[in-house]
Length: 245
Image (cartoon, rainbow, N blue to C red; front, side):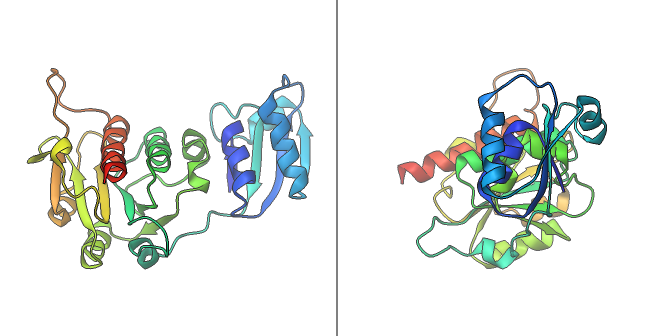
């Protein structure tokens, strides 16, 4: 895997979840504290540092703005689905993010970043008709991909049905939901928060697997929020309820 961007590479090295082959730094980049920290972390982990021409690094990069740094690493470890459904000894109740057909890498990265900040314990990503963790996603997530356990599921409806059988509440977010997000009473329980695709929202099969479909109350003229913005509200509403419990 290729990881790009200063914060994403810093988190890659700091988390230490997977082997890192090397770190590339662009020559002539202005000094910055985070770049010095990246070098220190790489040396501490015996990761080779390569200084390359800015043009060489730009040609290697897959995202638009790698910020003068990238790294090559082993693929992200995939979490066990059943393990995500269980409460770890001494840990919090399962609090999962699931995405249904999100195709914009910036949106997925933002959702994973919000999930990590809200204290989510894992994420479910569908194998088909959705974006996966690319260098652009990892950069937008600002390192959250190194800290949120994730698994790829062949069919999200089937995975959500399994979550329900394991005792998790499945809460979908949709503009046509029957319950206000802010009246949600299951936030303190083991829960999966499901966000739908840009524009089309939750698919029919996924919606059918939800125990609750919640909406974000809006008094404005727009029909709904961007999926990343909606995700921030939903994830932190669950976090707020858990903190108050």
